[in-house]
Image 1 (spheres, rainbow, N blue to C red):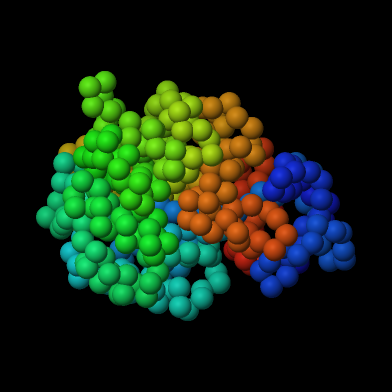
Image 2: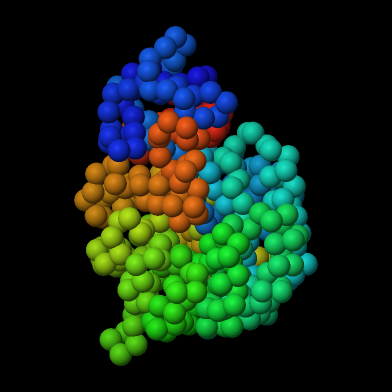
Length: 379
């Protein structure tokens, strides 16, 4: 396949227009019609491939499972959601188990597997977090922020860690400055940080908030908390799990109104139960009970989600009453800017990677393309 002929396409700077799209060697080369292009039903729209920078697993596989087949399974499964690029996300565990996961993801990346969504790198969620807001992370393995320990993990990963979730108040200043110097996203999360500490963190390299509202000090009128600090820090992108379980519609509206849509990043934070029926699953050796849209530990703690990225975009459209292109931005150009990969990903423009999702107005996905490769086809 070399492109699309005269389709509805969301082109950067132009909105949805009628145009052809041609790509070669994984890059967009032209918007001019030529021979051999695929024609689509007029009800379909070509948008940028989605980016999920915070996902643990899907279809009985988890990023902590140390087999290449598990990463391959996640990559192929989430392609059906329109995801063209993602970051397998680890969790707070023993150093030995984190090392195994990082080595496994490194091996997958080096093999350049072409069957599913592209693995940009790893999101290290923990172990540098707060015991008070550990969420579904095992407390026994939590440690204070440490540049030295991070450097160990980065070496094991083959320099593939692209984002680190951390509690800034747990000795995080030096680590945040180091991550910033290395071009790695420091994301404040699972944290008891005050609003003033978050504002300070933003000055020391923090550019992201992990699943905003969840597993962080809440907003209070006498201490604005982590949530208040995130809202006040213009440089921080706010991750959002828009499954309408983790965050209610009213709180979504408040966050988006204060931050502005340009600073909202949709993530799924999905676990191995995504794409599977209700039942009992696992997360970091902990039993997770999945019922409907909710995944919880035995004590009722939310443990990730079963959210699909295309559904997250649809939910945002419905809650905020925004059009399709604005909603798609929250899963494409916004995460690309946060990760500093917007020169190659996140929108449809000449010279950028040929990453596309073919959808209808209800966000049903019919085809996904990553770097010019068809990784899902339901046309």
